[in-house]
Structures are given as C-alpha cells and as structure tokens.
Amino acid sequence: MPARLLPTQPDPRPQWDVFCRVIDNLGDIGVCWRFCSNLAQRGQSVRLWIDAPDALSWMVPGALEGLVPDIAVWHWTDPLPPGSLQQSPPAGIWVEAFGCDPAPEWMDWLAGRIATGHPQPTWLNLEYMSAESYVERCHRLPSPIFTGPLGGLTKWFFYPGFTPATGGLLREPDLMERRHQFDATNWLHNQDLPSDAATRRIGLFCYEPPPLQQVLREVAEDPLPSTWLATHGRSAQALAHAQQGLTGTPCEVHTLAPLTQTEFDHLLWTCDLNFVRGEDSLVRALWAGQAFVWHIYPQHDNAHHAKLEAFLDWLQAPPSLRQFHRLWNGVSRPRYEVWPGWAVVDEWRTCALAARERLLLQPDLVTQVLEFIAKKR
Amino acid sequence: MKIAQELRAGNVIMHGKDPMIVLKTEYARGGRGAATVRLKLKALLNNMATEVVCRADDKMEQIILDKKECTYSYFADPMYVCMDTDFNQYEVEAENMGDALNYLEDGMTVEVVFYEGKAISVELPTSVERVITWTEPAVKGDTSGKVLKPAKIATGFEVAVPLFVAQDDKIEIDTRTGEYRKRV
Image (cartoon, rainbow over all chains, first blue to last red; front, side):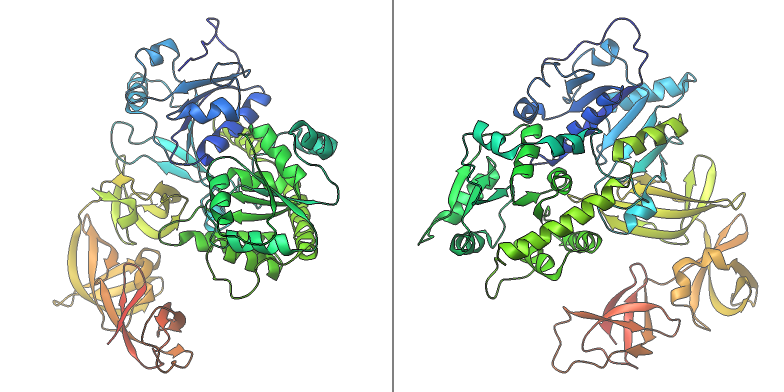
C-alpha cells in the first residue's frame, strides 16, 4: 500500500487518526472517507487507517496514491507495517469508527506515553447513525476505560443523527451549491445514458429486496416510461436476477460502471426515485432531495425493524411511503400491487424535500465534531 | 470481570480506585451487531452520579460485596427498609434501589448488598411471580405467544405479555430483562 509521507517539518494543523475496519459492503469505507474528506476541507490533516482499502481505488481515485490533499491512507494490517508508528507518530485526535478498537500497537504506544506523563489523545467513537431515541440519550457521553493498561482514560461517543440533540449528518460546506448548479442532462450525456425528458429515472443501490421483481414488473406497466440505472456489483446482480423470468414489456435497464463518491451523488441528483441502502447512501439521498426508498442493513434479530420505523417517524413519511419501505425491506409481504405509481412517488419527493429543509437548519456532523474536540482539548 | 451487557442495577464496579454502583442500564443495538449500554453510575465514596456509555462487550471489574437475605419491610422516605431474620433493619437509598422498585412488595425476599458495612443496594431473585392488575382482554385461541400486548402489575410496572394472558393471571417475570417468562 503506497502511503503518503508526512512532511519532515512539524505540521501546525490539527492531526487526526481515523480508524476504520471494513465489515462488509461499502458503508464503513464510504462514511469514513467522507468524514476524512470533510475534515480535510476544513483545514485538518487526516490519516485514515483502513484494513481493506481497495474500494477506494474506484470510489476516490488518487486516494490510495496520496493525491488527495491533507488525507493520507494507511493500510491497517495486523500487525501494523514495521516502523509505521516511528515513521509517523500517532495524532492528538483519534476517531474509531463504529467501535473498531485501534490496533494493539497503538494501545501499547499510548500506555507508554501516559506512563511518562503525556496527555491522552482526544478519542472519539463515531457510532452508527439512527433515528432511535437512545441516540439522543447517548450522544456525547463519556466512555471510561475500566480495565487494562489504559484503565482510567476516557473515550467519547459521538452519534450521527437527525435531530438537533444528535451529532447531525455528514454534509460538505459547498454541497447544496453544487447540487443547485448540477445539470442532469449534461451528466447523463457524459455517462452515455439516455436523457429523454419524458422518461422517469430510477437509481438502484440495494441488497436483495424481496419485492424487486414485482416492482420491476409493475413499474414497466406504469403509463409513464421508466429507466433503471443500477449501480455495479450487488445491486446490478440483484436486478439481473429479478429480470430473469419476467415476461412482457421489460423496463429499460442500464448497469453503471463503478461510480466515484462524487458521481454517485450525481446519480442520486439525476434520478426521480432513488433506492439506497445502508448508512452513507441514505444521507446522500436526503441531500439529493429526490424521492427515495431505504434498504436498511438487515440484522439477524430484526433490530433493524425498530430502526427503520424510527427513521420513518422522523421523516414524517406518508402512509404510502411507510408501506413501501416495509415491503421493500421484507418487514411485510405484498398482497396486491406494490408499485404506487409516479403521482404517489412525487408526493414522496415533497416529504424528502421537507426533511432536507429540517436537516439544513442543523449543523453538520463535522462542524459538531470540531466544536466538540475544541471543547475537550 | 463482567461485561457491560451483563450489568444490572445494584451491581458495583471499579473505575480506577472508585467503586461505583450501577443505578440504571439501557441496552441499545447499533448496526451490524454492535451494541452499547448506557449506564447511570454513582460513586460510593462521594455520591457523585454520572452517565457513561460503553460497548456491550466492554469488560469491567465487578466488586463482589457482602450480601444478606432480608425481607422488605417499609418505605421511610427516601429510604427503603429491609429486615434480616434477627430483626436488624437496613436502610437503602431509594435512588440505589434501581429496577427492584418495579417488583417490590411488602414481605418480599431480597438480598441486601453491603459495601464496607453500609447497605447500598438490593438484588432480586432472577425471576418473580406477579399478578396482572391490568391488561386488555385475553384473545381466545391465541397460544402462540408471538404477539405481545402491554400489561401492568401492582407497582405500575409494564410488561409485554402474550395475547392469551388475562387480568388477575399470575405470571413469571425475568427481573434481569423485565420480560415475561410464562403464565403460572
């Protein structure tokens, strides 16, 4: 893994170490990169430690080569690359994403520092996003380390969320301006995609939603013509599988090449309806201000059902949108038609826009993190 | 050692050199199997209360304290008074009673917990039997127990019960989770 060497002169800017372990899919890496990118945009110097950085090669071209200003990507191997701590000592601010513990070498290093009288780093655990009420109750709470050589130190839990009592959502300072200036027709043309104004566009980023085939069939029967734009990988595979066995007039389907994070935003801005999944793309769909349906990460004990309902409550989702979410996520089973028609989907867009307005009144996640760090240091 | 997820109100853990009693716990699922526990703690030495959050699998040292089986006698605001078989009375602060208040009734057997000779909390048996004082009428034929409805016991504590459970039924409740176990 190529790693960008830090300058030999001391860097006066605040230094951050962000730790990310990829569990599956692209959510962890997507959130962490946007977080680091947001920090770098605001004058911070960031080092991202990540155990499976490969997806960054297409998600953010140049990131692995150190070509993105103020962000160095380090491959977090087990054990760490020899000499990495000596080459670039740990930073004063640590962020462990989603409760991934920093490597044992880091813990040993920190214990040694503490033993010789140095202060501990300001240490955040950036948690999972949820609209459930516990997020407000747990946000910004200390998390003492009770045992081991680091016993007595304190981490802080930081929860992204949707209300003013939470940490907010990731949002770049110039995002809405870029959104405003975006030209969908031009973007479609550059992607070699049809841009017929009379055709509705559906973006697909999902796991394997149970009613996908039924939705696909019913959308094809809608009086308004539609085009599906499927992201590569798992979504495209799910769509291809759903297409098998369909008879009659099929929908027009395009499978996209891997999109950078920026281009993924453009896809969301282009489509009249966005199917999104996981954490990062839900937030991006909210900023897009188009109708969207969330495929929530499924958990074996169905804990995601309560999480989904809490989000729909916050969203003030109309009954049709709630019903569609429950079907799309397999919480309930379809008895009749699933597809509600484009007139209803346009109402979903009104709901999404109102939610975006509420969110834009709140400070974004990185603004809040920076304020929090300033108070704690 | 105990993990955070196993902590219950009344447990005492060490934080540095400070023994802290657990006043309240709240378990929450995050994403992808991750879970956290929010703890309300009180330092035994200076009575300072604090709220913290831990990952559910964080380890902490639990102090094993002296315990004595007692009977709950009466409430003398703000203390709950328990009595042992020798008629010695022990007072426990209301704040330290934790979840025990959900199930407390006169003459109930509890274990009073002591730290340096002072009664600091009580521990309950893992299950108790209580009569349902209010719930919606039972649904005939429902014996699956999959669908739950709210019910209350004499303390006002609400527990989710299967549809076939009726008012005045006696049920067994798991005091560790506050969940219905079975109809007695």
